[in-house]
Image (spheres, rainbow, N blue to C red):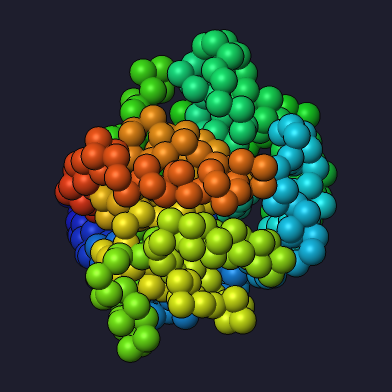
Length: 447
């Protein structure tokens, strides 16, 4: 071997060693794209925190109201436009949240309200991804698959509800509880996703051409189906104890367990709230996420009359309280108090967004489900099938009234089998660590 060839060989070995060491010395960067409301975003902040603790550099692109939570946990933040929660609390938002008559009407309303801000998210997400080793995206950000294709890095679709077709139950965003058979259930996923894709396709194609230099996509090229065809694993932040893994799903899809975020870790109750919950009669908690002021007033008045009828008291969780509606029987509390209040309450009346639903189940509390939109009906039915709740009372229906709510609350605090089921399920869920399970999966895939 010549001196020159020996030198080349030594250089190759040194470069290989440097490359290996750099993987240990320079943390891999992961970008998480997660626009949306609190229930959509909080679990992804929890996931990002877990990845950060595992040694990754994490950037989360989301809406500005989540910046303090993200940066306080040592992650980088990239702002996406708009505030979906303010939008939903507006008059147009209240109209959007009224129960749609069909999936097509749901997507039509969604497109009118959210597509302007989602179109801006396409452009503003790019800076969050340019130096990443991999991209993770929530369902509202599956356009990250296009960004990953342009950057030639992996993309991992994540979701809090089942999105891959199964014959066991229909698409979770469909409000009807009726199974339409294996073939019909399977088709409900493809059809629902195609409806959404047709509304978004032109914006996506314009963005792909102008910003990513990628070819346009066709009529049936919706992103979830494309990722399925490419054999990409989906990562699910829910528990298989709550949603049993469908037998017809490929093994590559990961069900990790829920991704809870301890939002109120530095929060402490004031004296008035502490006194209120420590009285002899434990309160009922009411939690309805993002709703407008008129809807809040309607619900609070029903709650007030119900509590008087059954001689109980309650706490209404809201970040935009109307203190004029408070009384000796009902007071307001901020959303960060939720997990703390679950330790003291008899039961909780809530809209069944996935974050609240998972928190209630982990706490072992019984539930009066009051869904009003999208996958909330899916979770309400799931709670009832697990025998940890009363019969659902859809919030926008005539069934949500004083008499029915009073009957439901009595059942939730008196039926021994429901109480025992809730306690048992909570004990099992608290043993799971969904974030750790997800991090373990990504450590195998992102190197």
